[in-house]
Amino acid sequence: MRAGVLGIVNCLALVTVYTSDVTAQRDPLTPAFAQQVRPWSTPRTPDGVPDLQGVWMNNTVTPFERPTELAGRELLTDDELAMLKQRAARLFDGSGDTAPGDELFLALLANPEEHKTARGTGDYNLAWQKEDLVFDRRTSQIFDPPDGRLPSLTQEGQQRLAVTAQRRQQPVVPENLAPLSRCISHGGPRIGFLHARNNSYYQIVQAHGVVVILAEMIHEARMIPTDGRPHLSPAIRAWTGDSRGRWENGTLIIETTNFSPEINFYGAGEHLRLTERLTRIDNDTIQYEVTVDDPATWTRPWKAMVPWKRSDKTIYEFACHEENRALKGIL
Image (cartoon, rainbow, N blue to C red; front, side, top):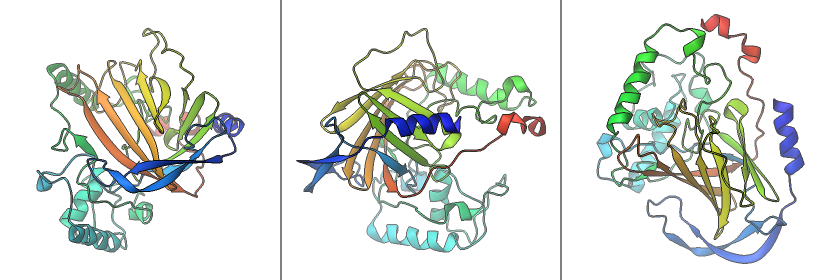
Protein backbone atom coordinates (compact mmCIF):
# COMPACT_ATOMS: atom_id res chain seq x y z
CA MET A 1 0.00 0.00 0.00
CA ARG A 2 2.76 2.43 0.93
CA ALA A 3 4.68 1.87 -2.30
CA GLY A 4 1.54 2.30 -4.38
CA VAL A 5 0.46 5.54 -2.74
CA LEU A 6 3.94 7.03 -2.77
CA GLY A 7 4.33 6.02 -6.38
CA ILE A 8 1.19 7.94 -7.30
CA VAL A 9 2.39 10.91 -5.29
CA ASN A 10 5.79 10.94 -6.94
CA CYS A 11 4.32 10.64 -10.44
CA LEU A 12 1.99 13.56 -9.85
CA ALA A 13 4.58 15.91 -8.40
CA LEU A 14 5.03 19.21 -10.25
CA VAL A 15 7.71 21.85 -10.20
CA THR A 16 6.44 25.04 -8.59
CA VAL A 17 6.64 28.34 -10.39
CA TYR A 18 5.76 31.73 -8.95
CA THR A 19 3.65 34.43 -10.50
CA SER A 20 3.60 38.09 -9.69
CA ASP A 21 -0.09 38.24 -8.83
CA VAL A 22 -0.79 39.75 -5.44
CA THR A 23 -3.66 38.54 -3.30
CA ALA A 24 -4.86 39.56 0.13
CA GLN A 25 -4.69 36.85 2.74
CA ARG A 26 -7.10 36.08 5.53
CA ASP A 27 -6.03 36.04 9.13
CA PRO A 28 -6.46 32.46 10.45
CA LEU A 29 -6.46 33.68 14.05
CA THR A 30 -9.75 35.58 14.02
CA PRO A 31 -13.23 34.03 13.88
CA ALA A 32 -14.39 36.51 11.23
CA PHE A 33 -11.40 35.76 8.97
CA ALA A 34 -10.87 39.48 8.33
CA GLN A 35 -8.70 40.41 5.37
CA GLN A 36 -5.13 41.20 6.30
CA VAL A 37 -3.53 44.43 5.20
CA ARG A 38 -0.22 43.15 3.92
CA PRO A 39 -0.20 41.61 0.41
CA TRP A 40 1.35 38.27 -0.40
CA SER A 41 2.31 36.72 -3.72
CA THR A 42 0.60 33.36 -4.12
CA PRO A 43 2.81 30.57 -5.51
CA ARG A 44 1.32 28.89 -8.58
CA THR A 45 1.72 25.60 -10.41
CA PRO A 46 2.50 25.52 -14.15
CA ASP A 47 -1.28 25.23 -14.65
CA GLY A 48 -1.69 28.64 -13.01
CA VAL A 49 -3.64 27.45 -9.95
CA PRO A 50 -2.52 28.09 -6.35
CA ASP A 51 0.25 25.76 -5.24
CA LEU A 52 -0.72 23.87 -2.05
CA GLN A 53 1.94 21.19 -2.39
CA GLY A 54 4.06 20.04 0.53
CA VAL A 55 3.73 18.51 3.97
CA TRP A 56 1.37 20.28 6.37
CA MET A 57 0.54 19.65 10.02
CA ASN A 58 -2.56 20.34 12.08
CA ASN A 59 -1.21 20.79 15.60
CA THR A 60 -3.61 23.46 16.81
CA VAL A 61 -4.22 23.71 20.54
CA THR A 62 -7.59 25.43 19.95
CA PRO A 63 -10.36 23.05 21.09
CA PHE A 64 -12.88 21.72 18.58
CA GLU A 65 -15.85 22.85 20.71
CA ARG A 66 -15.79 25.87 23.03
CA PRO A 67 -15.42 24.81 26.68
CA THR A 68 -18.29 25.74 28.98
CA GLU A 69 -15.82 27.74 31.09
CA LEU A 70 -15.39 30.11 28.11
CA ALA A 71 -19.05 30.31 27.02
CA GLY A 72 -19.77 33.57 25.18
CA ARG A 73 -16.09 34.30 24.51
CA GLU A 74 -14.69 33.93 20.99
CA LEU A 75 -11.14 35.01 21.86
CA LEU A 76 -8.64 34.70 24.68
CA THR A 77 -6.73 37.74 25.86
CA ASP A 78 -3.02 38.02 25.13
CA ASP A 79 -2.29 37.39 28.81
CA GLU A 80 -4.44 34.26 28.85
CA LEU A 81 -2.73 32.94 25.74
CA ALA A 82 0.71 33.56 27.26
CA MET A 83 -0.41 31.73 30.43
CA LEU A 84 -1.53 28.68 28.43
CA LYS A 85 1.83 28.57 26.64
CA GLN A 86 3.65 28.66 29.98
CA ARG A 87 1.47 25.87 31.34
CA ALA A 88 2.07 23.77 28.22
CA ALA A 89 5.85 24.16 28.60
CA ARG A 90 5.63 22.95 32.18
CA LEU A 91 3.13 20.16 31.54
CA PHE A 92 5.19 18.65 28.75
CA ASP A 93 8.23 18.36 31.02
CA GLY A 94 6.53 15.49 32.86
CA SER A 95 5.62 11.96 31.84
CA GLY A 96 1.83 12.22 31.98
CA ASP A 97 -0.63 10.75 29.54
CA THR A 98 -1.04 12.21 26.10
CA ALA A 99 -4.04 14.53 25.72
CA PRO A 100 -5.79 14.07 22.36
CA GLY A 101 -8.28 16.50 20.90
CA ASP A 102 -9.97 18.95 23.25
CA GLU A 103 -8.48 17.16 26.24
CA LEU A 104 -5.23 19.10 25.84
CA PHE A 105 -6.88 22.52 26.01
CA LEU A 106 -9.01 21.45 28.98
CA ALA A 107 -5.88 20.21 30.75
CA LEU A 108 -4.23 23.59 30.23
CA LEU A 109 -7.28 25.31 31.68
CA ALA A 110 -7.30 22.99 34.71
CA ASN A 111 -3.49 23.26 35.14
CA PRO A 112 -2.79 19.92 36.85
CA GLU A 113 0.64 19.00 38.13
CA GLU A 114 0.64 16.07 35.71
CA HIS A 115 -1.97 15.11 33.15
CA LYS A 116 -3.61 11.72 33.65
CA THR A 117 -6.62 10.33 31.82
CA ALA A 118 -9.24 8.19 33.52
CA ARG A 119 -8.65 5.24 31.19
CA GLY A 120 -4.91 5.67 30.69
CA THR A 121 -3.13 5.81 27.34
CA GLY A 122 -0.50 3.08 27.60
CA ASP A 123 2.72 4.06 25.84
CA TYR A 124 1.27 7.33 24.50
CA ASN A 125 2.68 9.87 26.93
CA LEU A 126 3.27 13.59 26.60
CA ALA A 127 6.51 13.02 24.71
CA TRP A 128 4.27 12.66 21.64
CA GLN A 129 3.13 16.28 22.13
CA LYS A 130 6.37 17.94 23.10
CA GLU A 131 6.79 20.18 20.06
CA ASP A 132 5.11 21.93 17.17
CA LEU A 133 2.03 23.06 19.08
CA VAL A 134 0.16 25.91 17.36
CA PHE A 135 -1.48 28.45 19.66
CA ASP A 136 -3.94 31.19 18.74
CA ARG A 137 -6.51 33.25 20.61
CA ARG A 138 -9.64 31.47 19.36
CA THR A 139 -11.64 29.48 21.93
CA SER A 140 -13.08 26.96 19.45
CA GLN A 141 -12.44 25.60 15.98
CA ILE A 142 -16.20 25.72 15.37
CA PHE A 143 -17.17 29.28 14.44
CA ASP A 144 -20.73 28.64 13.25
CA PRO A 145 -22.92 28.31 15.28
CA PRO A 146 -21.51 31.37 17.05
CA ASP A 147 -21.51 29.60 20.43
CA GLY A 148 -18.70 27.35 19.16
CA ARG A 149 -20.64 24.16 19.86
CA LEU A 150 -22.09 21.44 17.65
CA PRO A 151 -25.77 21.96 16.79
CA SER A 152 -28.43 19.82 18.43
CA LEU A 153 -29.01 16.35 17.02
CA THR A 154 -32.20 15.52 15.19
CA GLN A 155 -34.35 12.66 16.49
CA GLU A 156 -32.82 10.39 13.85
CA GLY A 157 -29.34 11.51 14.88
CA GLN A 158 -30.08 10.75 18.53
CA GLN A 159 -31.33 7.28 17.64
CA ARG A 160 -28.24 6.57 15.55
CA LEU A 161 -26.01 7.71 18.43
CA ALA A 162 -27.86 5.43 20.84
CA VAL A 163 -27.39 2.44 18.52
CA THR A 164 -23.67 3.19 18.26
CA ALA A 165 -23.36 3.39 22.05
CA GLN A 166 -25.17 0.07 22.38
CA ARG A 167 -22.80 -1.59 19.94
CA ARG A 168 -19.82 -0.48 22.02
CA GLN A 169 -21.21 -2.42 24.99
CA GLN A 170 -21.35 -5.66 23.03
CA PRO A 171 -18.56 -8.26 23.16
CA VAL A 172 -15.74 -7.65 20.70
CA VAL A 173 -16.17 -9.96 17.72
CA PRO A 174 -14.88 -9.61 14.13
CA GLU A 175 -18.32 -8.55 12.89
CA ASN A 176 -18.50 -5.39 15.05
CA LEU A 177 -14.84 -4.40 15.12
CA ALA A 178 -14.48 -0.96 13.52
CA PRO A 179 -12.31 -0.47 10.40
CA LEU A 180 -10.17 1.99 12.39
CA SER A 181 -9.43 -0.65 15.04
CA ARG A 182 -8.32 -2.97 12.24
CA CYS A 183 -6.21 -0.19 10.63
CA ILE A 184 -8.07 -0.66 7.35
CA SER A 185 -9.69 2.76 7.10
CA HIS A 186 -10.48 5.67 9.34
CA GLY A 187 -14.09 4.73 8.71
CA GLY A 188 -15.03 8.15 7.40
CA PRO A 189 -13.54 11.44 6.26
CA ARG A 190 -10.46 12.35 8.27
CA ILE A 191 -10.61 16.07 7.64
CA GLY A 192 -8.57 18.88 9.08
CA PHE A 193 -9.75 19.18 12.67
CA LEU A 194 -9.85 15.53 13.70
CA HIS A 195 -7.36 13.98 16.15
CA ALA A 196 -5.01 16.95 16.16
CA ARG A 197 -1.45 16.31 17.36
CA ASN A 198 -1.63 12.54 16.77
CA ASN A 199 -0.58 11.49 13.27
CA SER A 200 -1.68 14.96 12.24
CA TYR A 201 0.30 15.40 9.02
CA TYR A 202 -0.97 15.73 5.45
CA GLN A 203 0.87 15.75 2.14
CA ILE A 204 -0.62 17.55 -0.86
CA VAL A 205 0.43 16.86 -4.45
CA GLN A 206 -1.08 18.48 -7.55
CA ALA A 207 -1.18 17.63 -11.25
CA HIS A 208 -3.30 18.83 -14.14
CA GLY A 209 -6.94 18.31 -13.16
CA VAL A 210 -6.30 16.52 -9.87
CA VAL A 211 -5.25 17.16 -6.26
CA VAL A 212 -4.06 14.35 -3.96
CA ILE A 213 -4.29 14.71 -0.17
CA LEU A 214 -2.44 11.95 1.66
CA ALA A 215 -3.27 11.66 5.37
CA GLU A 216 -0.62 10.24 7.68
CA MET A 217 -3.29 8.39 9.68
CA ILE A 218 -4.13 5.02 8.08
CA HIS A 219 -2.15 6.15 4.99
CA GLU A 220 -5.37 7.03 3.08
CA ALA A 221 -4.96 9.15 -0.05
CA ARG A 222 -7.87 11.17 -1.46
CA MET A 223 -7.70 11.62 -5.24
CA ILE A 224 -9.76 14.77 -5.93
CA PRO A 225 -10.55 15.59 -9.59
CA THR A 226 -10.66 19.32 -10.40
CA ASP A 227 -11.51 18.96 -14.10
CA GLY A 228 -15.27 19.50 -13.77
CA ARG A 229 -16.37 15.87 -13.98
CA PRO A 230 -19.68 15.06 -12.19
CA HIS A 231 -20.06 13.08 -8.98
CA LEU A 232 -20.45 9.32 -9.14
CA SER A 233 -23.89 7.75 -9.08
CA PRO A 234 -25.56 7.99 -5.64
CA ALA A 235 -25.66 4.18 -5.70
CA ILE A 236 -21.86 4.10 -5.27
CA ARG A 237 -20.86 4.68 -1.62
CA ALA A 238 -17.44 4.83 0.08
CA TRP A 239 -15.93 5.42 3.52
CA THR A 240 -14.33 8.69 2.41
CA GLY A 241 -17.14 9.61 0.03
CA ASP A 242 -16.83 10.93 -3.52
CA SER A 243 -14.93 14.23 -3.78
CA ARG A 244 -14.90 16.85 -6.55
CA GLY A 245 -12.79 20.01 -6.43
CA ARG A 246 -12.77 23.42 -8.10
CA TRP A 247 -10.72 26.62 -7.79
CA GLU A 248 -12.34 29.91 -6.83
CA ASN A 249 -10.38 33.12 -6.13
CA GLY A 250 -7.29 31.31 -4.88
CA THR A 251 -9.21 28.74 -2.83
CA LEU A 252 -9.54 25.00 -3.45
CA ILE A 253 -13.17 24.07 -2.77
CA ILE A 254 -13.89 20.35 -2.32
CA GLU A 255 -17.45 19.00 -2.30
CA THR A 256 -17.79 15.44 -0.94
CA THR A 257 -20.91 13.26 -1.04
CA ASN A 258 -21.81 9.55 -1.45
CA PHE A 259 -20.71 8.45 2.02
CA SER A 260 -21.25 4.92 3.29
CA PRO A 261 -24.14 4.51 5.77
CA GLU A 262 -21.58 3.01 8.17
CA ILE A 263 -19.25 6.02 8.33
CA ASN A 264 -17.74 7.19 11.59
CA PHE A 265 -18.06 10.98 11.65
CA TYR A 266 -19.60 12.53 14.77
CA GLY A 267 -22.70 10.40 14.30
CA ALA A 268 -23.38 11.54 10.71
CA GLY A 269 -24.99 9.24 8.14
CA GLU A 270 -25.04 8.67 4.41
CA HIS A 271 -26.68 12.07 3.74
CA LEU A 272 -23.56 13.90 4.91
CA ARG A 273 -22.21 16.61 2.59
CA LEU A 274 -18.83 18.24 3.23
CA THR A 275 -17.61 21.48 1.70
CA GLU A 276 -13.91 22.02 2.39
CA ARG A 277 -12.00 25.21 1.58
CA LEU A 278 -8.20 25.26 1.47
CA THR A 279 -6.61 28.69 1.08
CA ARG A 280 -2.87 29.31 1.26
CA ILE A 281 -2.67 32.58 3.19
CA ASP A 282 1.11 32.83 3.53
CA ASN A 283 4.19 30.78 2.75
CA ASP A 284 3.78 28.57 5.82
CA THR A 285 0.02 28.41 6.39
CA ILE A 286 -3.04 26.89 4.73
CA GLN A 287 -6.34 28.02 6.18
CA TYR A 288 -8.60 24.97 6.27
CA GLU A 289 -12.35 25.53 6.62
CA VAL A 290 -15.16 23.00 6.41
CA THR A 291 -18.94 23.23 6.26
CA VAL A 292 -20.70 20.08 7.51
CA ASP A 293 -24.29 19.51 6.43
CA ASP A 294 -26.40 16.47 7.27
CA PRO A 295 -30.07 17.39 7.86
CA ALA A 296 -30.75 13.84 9.05
CA THR A 297 -28.23 14.23 11.89
CA TRP A 298 -28.05 17.90 12.94
CA THR A 299 -30.70 20.59 13.15
CA ARG A 300 -28.49 22.93 11.10
CA PRO A 301 -25.15 22.94 9.25
CA TRP A 302 -21.98 23.84 11.13
CA LYS A 303 -18.54 25.23 10.23
CA ALA A 304 -15.04 24.92 11.63
CA MET A 305 -11.55 26.19 10.80
CA VAL A 306 -7.97 25.21 11.63
CA PRO A 307 -4.62 26.48 10.33
CA TRP A 308 -2.34 23.92 8.69
CA LYS A 309 1.33 24.77 9.18
CA ARG A 310 4.11 23.85 6.75
CA SER A 311 6.48 21.17 7.97
CA ASP A 312 9.88 20.04 6.76
CA LYS A 313 9.31 16.60 8.26
CA THR A 314 8.73 13.39 6.33
CA ILE A 315 5.54 11.34 6.49
CA TYR A 316 6.48 7.74 7.17
CA GLU A 317 4.43 4.60 6.68
CA PHE A 318 1.59 4.19 9.18
CA ALA A 319 2.56 0.63 10.08
CA CYS A 320 -0.31 -0.80 12.11
CA HIS A 321 -1.70 -4.33 12.44
CA GLU A 322 0.29 -5.56 9.48
CA GLU A 323 -1.78 -8.29 7.80
CA ASN A 324 -4.20 -7.85 10.72
CA ARG A 325 -2.09 -10.14 12.89
CA ALA A 326 -2.95 -8.00 15.92
CA LEU A 327 -6.62 -8.91 15.49
CA LYS A 328 -6.08 -12.16 17.36
CA GLY A 329 -4.75 -10.27 20.37
CA ILE A 330 -7.63 -7.81 20.30
CA LEU A 331 -10.22 -10.58 20.24
